[in-house]
Length: 451
Image (cartoon, rainbow, N blue to C red; front, side):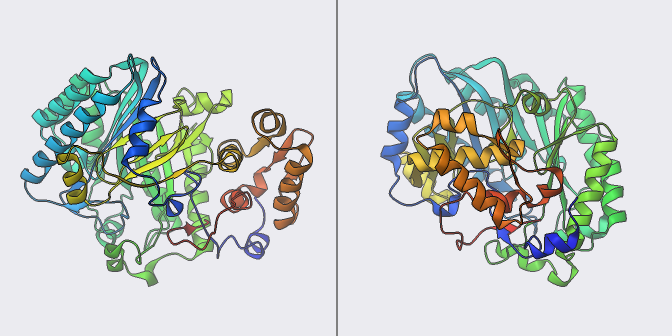
């Protein structure tokens, strides 16, 4: 790894850059995209295609202070059941305009806490979806599961509905850190949930863990990672905690003076990274790890790894339809996002309309830069032959873009006969180098620390 002094000189510890789960990033979406765009783009899906579907459930029993997701708290079942009815109504609207013979390569329920739904709600929602679009052969149905909000009946309902991958948020197992971030979840409770999931035949398990949390030290994160490894997850997302209290007001409850310095954050990441690698996990991009037989590792070896709003993915579908409040869809033509507020979303659907209020129509330049950034984020390299074959750009123009990005970082990124390459010592800078290929105004709020 490049020395910290050089990384500091290049701005790693000061920069705030996008995570590049999309390009352009969400702050650049505009109100010129509306429900007409969403409708037309759905109708333009080729018949017989395999697509992805994301359903957003924005409710949580307790609002974790560290979280910056679009969520709302509820202590009762009524708002969740009412929201389920709205989702079913939106699915009925979608069914009217879907082309024929579609299948689902991926079905994902996120939140919030989808497992706030009771067993009968889970069965009802899954039945509504799968009666409309069946799963493709080899398709994946995944659900975000809160160990605090799961029991035998709900796991059974999910398994019977066809869920074959579960995702558990861990964050950190240290009790002091859990109290400071407002997320109490013991190792024992998490293990019980993982065991319950596997007892119902669901072997694929994702886990999320955070570095950069208040009071986190090398020893503490090592202890949490070692506990997580006993659960044998198929893949792990090792995300850096993004402290953005100006966006997520609840983060104001987290003591800023207890957060590790940027240099310490890099050390925390490296401790966790080495432990995952020592246990046989393959490093996937900048912040994921997967067992060698997991789909992410397989797609990485094949050169087909992709990136979307959930991070790295092995899904190769061209269309991702998002339903529910604040959900984002991606089509070959652009992005479309629904209204963030549950009430605004519900009102639109009850009026027989999709709740799309913003988005972005792709230009040719967007598509070019999106592919270059995705290639860097997934493979740490850009293949010139691929770019020249797919896009209207000359070799001279492409190499000028490479040179600027390399010069910006003291030649650490390499220009090769094949294209552009980030060697291991430059990879802490990946998101910053990707920013060199970003044509948009980077002063937009919402970007996180580069490390």
